[in-house]
Image (cartoon, rainbow, N blue to C red; front, side, top):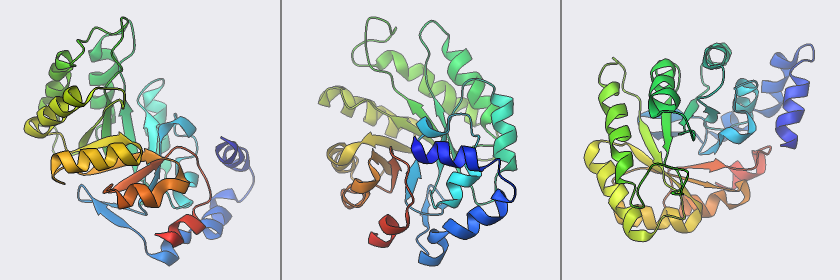
Length: 247
């Protein structure tokens, strides 16, 4: 969180928007951009939503070289949309959709998806851990109608935006493979998997037919990419120069 807090504090300084990109655009000199889902990302190293949930420093984080910046589709979505619009043209945002205990899927997933559709680069739908607090069966088949609703709703928009599934690593192997099979058949565009082992297993299971984004530490990014990930969502923000050079 140190880097995020530093950028947030610095963003109020005069001239920040002019000197920050010049200082940190290592990704441009290394020419390490990638095409995934027919979207151009500045680099294969990306950043999850835990460090800038409401998009206060989207453009500053993007200028560090991150391929996309994750944001949470919760809270004041209209304010989040304004911040996305103010970011630079090369900035990509991944809109994260999560069920909230005690709230309906329409309120926490479907409505935010509709509002954010024209502004996010793609969406990540998070499958919840099964527990007594969630209304889903152990094999998560009760979650399928939510997937179907988002895929059907996407047909109402002119532009095509990828939808990915993030599957909890605690899910047993059979349930995980059943969910991935359903995702492939229904039209889900990719997966978000935790760590090198999960990435390798998911890439092997899908035969490489679904792009997989791996989540892990920036220090482990090369190993996750070598395991078959198309991009890496880093859980610890950092200046990326030395890591990009290794790739």
